[in-house]
Amino acid sequence: MRFNQEPSYQHGANAKTAVVLANLGTPEAPTPAAVRVYLKQFLSDPRVVEIPRLIWWLILNGIILPFRSKQSAHKYASIWTPQGSPLKVHTENQAKLLQAVLTERGQAIRVEYAMRYGNPSLPSILDKLKEDGCDRILILPAYPQYSATTTASIFDTVFTHYTKVRNAPELRLIKHYHDDAAYIVALADSVRAHWQQHGKPEKLVMSFHGVPKRTLMLGDPYHCECYKTARLLATELGLSKEEYLVTFQSRFGKAEWLQPYTAPTLEKMAAEGIKKIDIMCPGFTSDCLETLEEIAMEAKADFLAAGGTEYRYIACLNETPAWIEAMAGVVQSHSGGWPIAITDEQQEVMRADREKGRLRALELGAEK
Image (cartoon, rainbow, N blue to C red):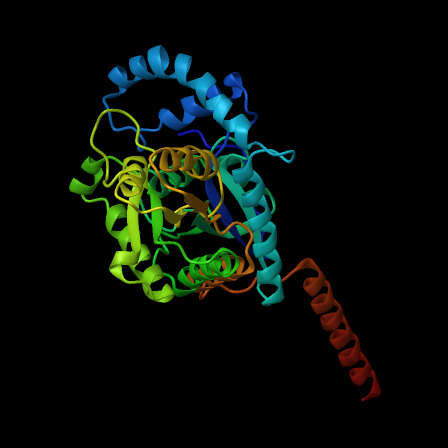
């Protein structure tokens, strides 16, 4: 096996600890060319599409990429900001704020963010941390609910990367935090703040990203974890079973996915006389194409066209203080037992103290 070139081992070097906030990814620009590059990487992942590789290669390159890239680019353009992709902007901000909170708590833990698809790539960030002497790394997926299509794909990338690293770091990977108390409270706080400003709706819809039903049958816990998040959130908000509903969005292809599907359910609700709803996406910790365009725009149009009169989207957690504090709690609970890395400044103070002690010992010896 050929290993990647890496920094030489420094005997006695102080090991550092880092956490990597890993999100799904985004195109570099809202253009057909950039979206095509992104979609090809994303849809080529066997964790995302479990179809025999040769058959899927023909479908992907012959049908999907030539036609879907332009359509998706138009959607990305509708949500793009002056700072860039919303998902990337929010994820980068979350990493900076998480770093600040951990520092305030006295945790000498470095925070970086990375993307599974697109940039900054997960392998590039892992290499960067190695160059900077980080020998303990905690991987924090941006997905509260575990799914093989998302969380496991990040794990695959991390493990594959280190097969080519001679001096691999100590690793910890966070599988899920769908029932973390602080995460649930952060979600509830965002809903309460929305209701305080706009009032309560007839029903709260919690829309999670969908996956093929086949994954549930094969043992993926995602479906159950989504429902547990929803149940805990409803309890925190004091909602009865009749006051909220769980749906699944972003269906792709002809196979059956987890149900009920979000868009048809919203249309049915409007047709049955439910006129005012609020909708949120608890499984997304950063607003992105699937929340801002699919839910806040497309689904709203569908609901209103079907007879609904009031449709309000509740933003993702993004940079809300309660969410940043919740993330810090998740990091601390999973990094327990790791020694806190000593900063360079602290090392200099310790060296100075040791030198002072040595000189004092010499002085005492001379006095005798």
